Length: 493
Image (cartoon, rainbow, N blue to C red; front, side, top):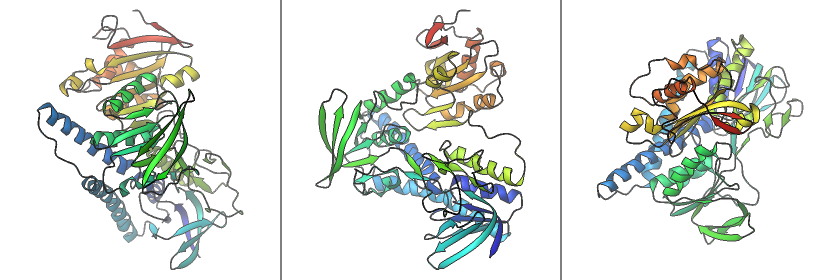
């Protein structure tokens, strides 16, 4: 029986990161992958969907520019876009595979990869590996589970990944559908509504069980996104409960019931089911391995499971399901096993981005969370119309919003940025949140000019009462106020 210092099951973002960190400790590592290196983070998740978004965004801008000059818009084919996305995915996958191949040659890592291979823990240290050519068992001092997640399916909806599909199969289309419905108004559903409506070839309906999409986000953020979706012809079914959905004559028929008890039937060409994801843990270990779980996934304490030598990272756990979080957890698990982490694993400063129209980036608390957890805080926001770079880009739709504690220290609680370059504007604030720092460090930094991040500095100066533009004068563009138990009051200096 071959022995390893570490066996990592799953070569998605978290598993790959864990294996590479173990290489730094010069350990003998076995990385097992059932399907494709990179996992959903590359093939049908972050990289692929965001490539779709980037291409759709460019096409939208192109269409608008041509239309403004009275010029015809060239047709775009789904197959061409799909091939470009495949090319992007292939570039990343080839990089990862070539990287591992070179490491294999240096005897630093061993990769086990088979399209029909499966791994199962038969004891706390033994892993049974099944392939189409046979079965083998290896021994590992430590094991990291990183098998990721898959789209959640609903039992009453006949998902065939052809007419009614999940995000895993959106690329199986051979054309842009003339109409489609998306069930689920969370991040993934809204991102695909953005993508398809950007191309201007698909009439998109979005089913939202509440009174607004993205229910976990602040109302001012949601208003911008809803307005832009609707301006591109997206029909948002607010306060709608899906009664049934099925296939009729090769199309999709669905019935909704609204909060006023009225019902309505719709018929579209395709449907996308986007109601969350579920962890991949089925048949991953035998009854001899006592790993504790709950309804959300594996229970872990800073990546360590109830079995001391077995760790779990990424979407298979009950923690935040994001690529950057999974990579962080993978590296942290290895550092706990073979070293000593310099800091605890924290999630308060996790940066996120939603690829919508426009993009939305955030870190820390939003106002919905602050009202519940903090009660009293200060909030300041600045419209993009006040930022020179946004004016230069001829796109002033958006704003920057920062939340701080309601005291003299004004420690940063969170930030949201809606608009162009949003994801590039949050890292300094994320660092300050992780350091439990206030806003003074940002007030006098010399930012590049013109840039969107200059808006962050102006927000901070507003809180300090020394902004260049005065919120008492530009009330439509600037906000600086306190919130005490849900009651707002303008800050007067």
